[in-house]
Length: 265
Length: 262
Image (cartoon, rainbow over all chains, first blue to last red; front, side, top):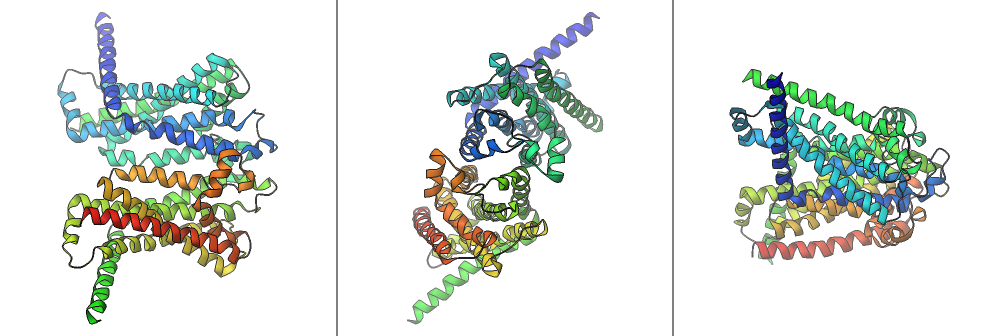
């Protein structure tokens, strides 16, 4: 029993150490983080200036401005920029041999994956806070107040864990940075095929069906209700629950891929 | 007189060899062209699917979202085709092949013309892909053949513009990594235009920016035949914008090349 507890504590310490390493890597190349902030801000500025008339369409949620509506979508887009980095960084570790060195060191296997994801989640939370502050300065309002803003930030971190877990699974399978990086356009398209930038009620046919069954929509919709309608415990639970479930699923997939890879060596 | 003729012939041979080399590269590595085709088609799918309800608003200009978004998607594809050819040049620069090209006797100008020609040819591929895809999904062409010709002229020349802009940056920074910066410029330029909605839908700074963005004229040139008939009053501002952009970016790229390889 004591052995289990000290094993868990050790794994926790190792995860924290590797998270710190991951964060140091990110901050050393902080310019890489910038497009993930500039691009969603540019899109939000353009969309809020060009879709004002769409607010009057029947089926569009009641909002004070398009800026309020697009806030959750912009945050999802911003964090998606860095979400695959946990995978590409792992693929780089595999390519340059650092991963092999970790394997021969007395580090548990799971913290190697969790450390990278932890770094990405911290960066995502930082991006979400920066975006929320900029949106508020530009006149957006979060009707659920500070507690809503905290839920939005936590959701951003959890979403990165979900996408990052998938990227890590790919990194282990392909062992190629380029292959993992190539998945970014897919994530970009998945965000577009959701309610991130426009309500699904105003979409038609197969695209609407696809958007309604997209996990990004299941995450964005409750977050949006917290922003434009106000506090609701059900929405907060859904906003956190969907990405949490997804991250458990994708991280388990990554751990399984790692175990398979180690067995085959 | 004969020497001048010979030089012109030699220059055109070098330019066409560089252009053909690029096209052969695509043929031998088809994977290179997949993003150029897939990305604009996916953008058309995303924009038409997400924003289809905009056609219900009075003054949008068409009731068929494909007629609005397809030319925009084709121009996006052309821009990425232009930047793709800059990517090939960046590869040549990093791998040392560019140094061998510099050993070619005669002017450096054909090196620039060849790369630009390659980008214009490459732009035909995504334009055709977007056009056929949109046609299959219900796009109509009320302007007939002149509409299709306007679209192809606009996409090919815009690919040339962005190839030249990319080369200005590449000759300065001399690295593949500069492609990221080029993509941000390209995406931004297209975004701040009448790509998704008409000017009458815009407010504030965007309305002013879109009005003075030359890409707006190019978009109107390429889109006119899909919204109605092709008219000279919409054609010439687009052509003029393209010619001015090519002259300015061409002069700067030429200066960059001369500084890089005097």
